[in-house]
Length: 114
Image (cartoon, one colour):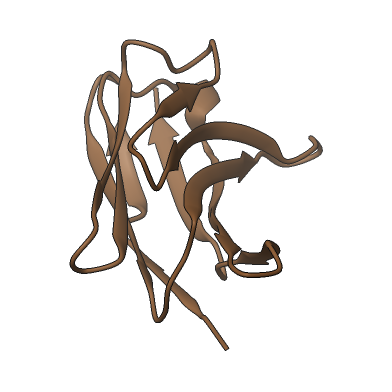
């Protein structure tokens, strides 16, 4: 069974940067990052396919970059120019072949102070 292990969350001041990592223990088809702020629904932040195609939430375009290391089965989320509204628990998500099962990481807290 494929598992996801996240790292890289923490506390940062507004305007700062953080890098999140998510390592998958097996083969995956696509990976992404979602976030959930207190009292809000979980939302997509960024996704990347096995072919390298990416898509981003409008709120993070130009500030966040998703990338992957295929050899390490790891996806990264580089977050720059962070804002207090980016404060949330960030969850790694992956689609696992051959049945396209969707799995989630345990979540990592990102707190941006003003």
